[in-house]
Image 1 (tube, rainbow, N blue to C red):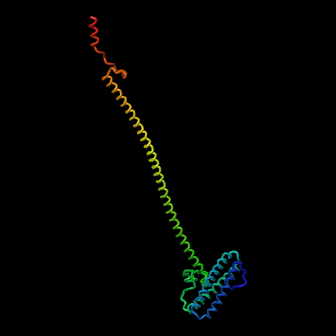
Image 2 (tube, helix red, strand yellow; image 1 turned 120 degrees about the horizontal axis):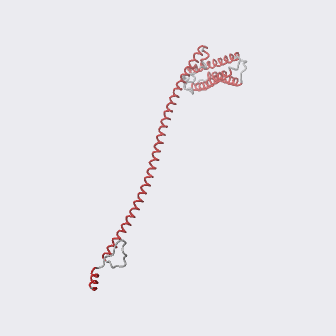
Image 3 (cartoon, one colour; image 1 turned 90 degrees about the vertical axis):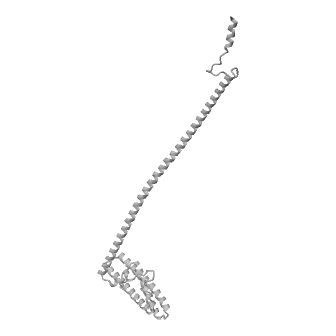
Length: 268
């Protein structure tokens, strides 16, 4: 690795962690030569694989921090940092190749470094960390352009999905608005019907009261007529009954003519 570089505190911390992991990997593979049991060798390889995953993560973190500070550093410092990163990648590649050799020797056919782990079968070289050391600048630029094109296509697809979602939402909102207006009209019609029912109920009550009043009047008139008829009948049957007054407009019965005739005969 390139030494004597003035690293920032973050880069220096990452560099220190990587050195510790590389030292642990070196000691681990030396111990692996002394282990004869295949099961113990497989377990040791799994532990070493975990350390290599951690080295991969630290190298990616180193590269991210390096890119953030690249605009602030002089070109010479950036060149040295890039060489340091490439040196880290090469050293990790050597341990990856060593791990594959030991895996084949103990019959451990578990695939590539991160296959079956938390990476879900993702190849290490495909992430442009280890394979970057074997690619030229033109290849890196081409690969980056291809990734940017794929990203643009994904963004376009996402925009189309968003537009379709917005359109569907607008249509749904329009339908809901129409249904809301229709519900409002129905509510207004129900209010009108309820008001009409109340008015009709009041009118029926008034008609009922008028009919009851008319019946009472008819009953009183009937009683009066019956009373008058009864009085007339009694007067005709018993005209000498003084307890019954004469009905106004009804003349009393005429006096007997025999009485007048008898008086005339007396005078002559």
